[in-house]
Image (cartoon, rainbow, N blue to C red; front, side, top):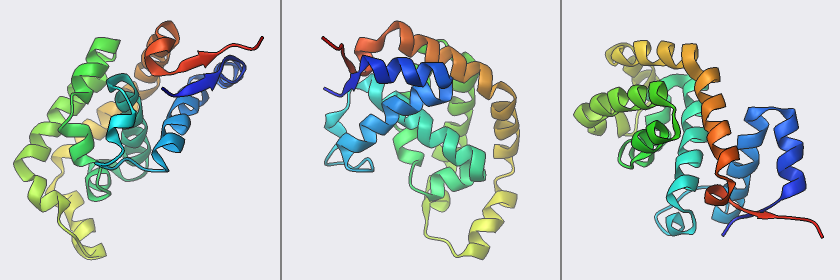
Length: 168
């Protein structure tokens, strides 16, 4: 089980919801040795995977959109796992819908989206897969509110995301 000091959780929460969630995902990445692989996936539970997938999703979408997310190898992790369903159950319904729609595009074109690409081919994918643009715009519009919903859920269900170590 991932262990986090209660004091660190309080400090991170005081800095805001992004820092609060990052504290958890940083702890997960530390346990995983920096990245998720088939060999270390079993070290996290479903809740922890959902939070880590959310981090990868938001980081990649904010920098380079769905095309970059998939080209960087996170497509299968996010779309072939119940991330969208888990986020919906946490209350982030808007984000869940975006992921379900993104999965439809991903499923229909995953081979092409995941193939090794030159810089030129990579840039051309943005034009070819313009259907991602609308989803990205929707995400930017709802991101802050949806992240707040997830942070609140984590705060209300800490034991699902880490073992909280209290100071004696």
